[in-house]
Length: 327
Image 1 (spheres, rainbow, N blue to C red):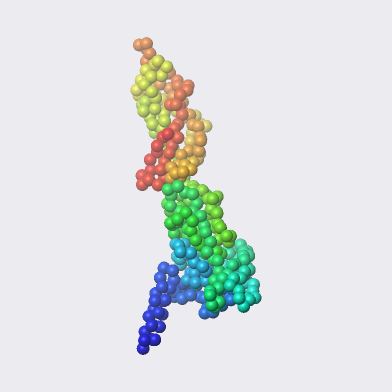
Image 2 (cartoon, rainbow, N blue to C red; image 1 turned 90 degrees about the horizontal axis):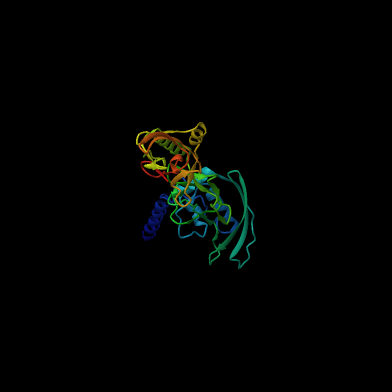
């Protein structure tokens, strides 16, 4: 009776654990057969098979697992299998000496459309009954300032995170207005996976929103007859000794400057990519106004000075209500 109770409780705990967040495929049972890790090559083949079948518990049982497994869960691995399935697994057998505690095993497989050949380093326990391999590698978090970065939908909690070697991972920004420029899907098929070439960018929809917001505000500023028009076009009270008469200002843009405005491109701040300015575009505005000097009023045209140049529009694209700051 004691034996039955102990075995019964152990089986229940294992089923609950496997069926939880880090559970295996389907019913939560591991695809690793008993004794599959009794040889170095057997452990490697079982590991790659577990990855191919989306069995996170099986894969974890065959590696020297790190203390932080934030991105080595069933949720993350399920996405990896969808991104790039593993197939065509081939593992070279190795001869194990009587006193060997480590062996190198060469394996090849296909990850999506990529052919991979890798030499795994395997080790055994004190009894020599089970072998495990170096299946955890590190991926660095791409630089994104204050924006939160996700890997297969799960946010980074440290600057580097551990993942399964041989799986595919998608890096993204946890905000609807942002994405990474370039190919954001990486294959964990090297000792260390660098993501330094990934830079934040606006999504196509967010870029359209940003541009439309600027165009609309500039059109309102240009249409204003007041000295304080906004957009960097504010007129001073006096120009070259002549008092600028309020309400007399006429602003307009040439066809080429209007086209430049329509095609304005965003530029993300390097350290704070949520702040999106314009990509160094110089847009001028023609300004005519009435000025009073020496008791007479005349029509003037502004030839130079800041009121003829649009300021640099900066928008915090993470704000609940988008507003432009003109710098």
